[in-house]
Image (cartoon, rainbow, N blue to C red; front, side, top):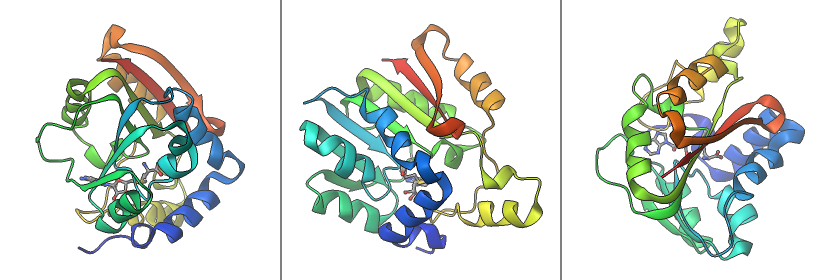
Length: 199
Ligand SMILES: C[S@@+](CC[C@H](N)C(=O)[O-])C[C@H]1O[C@@H](n2cnc3c(N)ncnc32)[C@H](O)[C@@H]1O
């Protein structure tokens, strides 16, 4: 499977994310981890190299399952003591159930139709669905060079993603879930927007 450079190695991925988020890097994970109580079960979709688990959830004795298309990232979840599963989330296979079903910085991979994956998350969660998504990013930059870099960094192995959310398009999408959205706020210095949905 051929992927963008950012997805070939967990250490490279983390270094690039640190560079992109700068001093807000830890805050993006903390904002999610704070919502998950000790001992809860978690399914993390598009989990990447397990950073949320290893640095922010493992010490809370969370029962963690990470799903991702990327075999190397999934191997890191398992090595870290979680349950890693290679999973193409474009498939309509029902998700494993958990108290909290989470997705961070990955909903854009499901554009132009992100609804089905959120609906599967809601079907799998017994407490809450937590989604945090970038609303400021390189791919939507007016600078064509930066925009190209942003788009080229998004191929997880099933094609580049030219489209991203902005805050208005994300708000519009989640407005469709009405009263199920119990919280929404900007996190990580305004780079991502967090939505919490009751299951
Ligand atoms: C930007 S990373 C986010 C990783 C992690 N959630 C974080 O915030 O650090 C996007 C992740 O989505 C995964 N991904 C993309 N398309 C996918 C798909 N169709 N099925 C499963 N995982 C996918 C990629 O392999 C990558 O690990």
